Image (cartoon, rainbow over all chains, first blue to last red; front, top):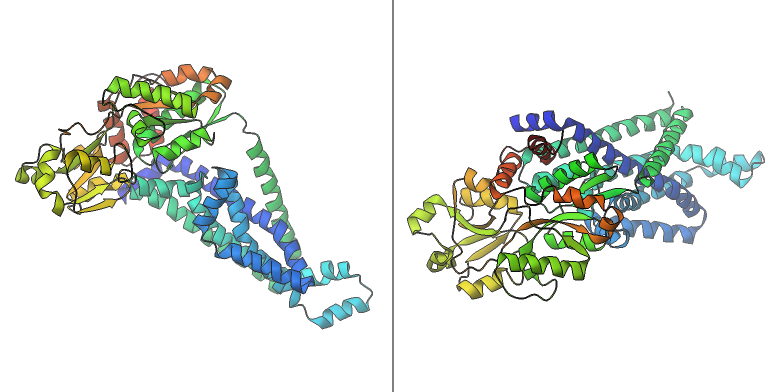
Length: 209
Length: 298
């Protein structure tokens, strides 16, 4: 415990940098997953067969062990944070696609009918009726994806990435529990914070202020 | 309520753009790779500080690459550009070599061979050797009269051996060759992170371990190393290495790398390892303190 406090005291600046790098990797992965996942989710809700294909592929990616996926990506993209971001992107894809898909398909047919009744085009229905109603679901997807991504990002050092995992692996490899905690505790806090913040956002969106 | 979500999305997008842009602007970065233990990590931090102090280059240390051969492959692929390697590695069959245990000969072969087959410049040694050392607890050494490796032979079948993650499979200087030379086969072998072997033998979870000779925990735990009486292990002088391509792009690095060549003896290295492994400090701080102490950093 004393070692841990001394270690934090001497290295807090480096730890902040690692935390920042961790957050950057996760946010990049999430942003990419949103950019690709929401359109894919929309596509999946419109065409039954295409939807099956998209969801199956996303499922297959998800069941790949994270370490194996990252190492496979490393063979293609080399050592470094790029590989990690692509891995996090792939991992965040399924929660985003699936929740977008579920959110869009749960919209009551009567509402769609009403939209058509007032003369809205299919695009207008999607933007003004379906997507707003699906938003709470999509946010749930982001929440799940964020928590998973923060966890997966801790194995980044194995493929040359940075972030809090650096301290965790240094702690394991150099038999130094102080460093292990210095990496693991902030990572756990990040995941909790992300879950809390996105949970709050979700409630605001769902029930209004 | 909706605009909260909009702000969240906008912030996320802006952040992503900013991060991407900052990621693209680092063309002049030198990456130094290290193995998993403290010694190469400390040396990498020293070079990071020296290079960033004396040039406009940015240096990124990439720690915890599994083994020396991973470091080598990464330099060959230009994923990293620099590292610390040990001359005895040539016996792991990277290129044809001549069998010798002479320090100068081994160094010469490493320098010529890795230049030719890997495009590496292998500098002269820092000034210390980090070899493998069979290690036991003091009590066991006294009780069983163990002084050299051959003394272990009668007891070996009932002993548990703890080793690093690569030695059991290494070719020229690994376990199979060791068995042939000494005629010793241990009862059970346990590969593990090398940092763990010291505690493992001190706490009697292992009977004998294969330690790294510059590790400060040998002294800290009061362990005894056994003499290599058959001269099985080749020399392992530590040298800085760099990809020749980077060196031709940034010739100023040559002088900076030279600053530590011949300047760190075994005693100094053990003291630095002590700070990291026993006092559990971060290698960045230890490296910086040392460079200030010897006046290479102001």
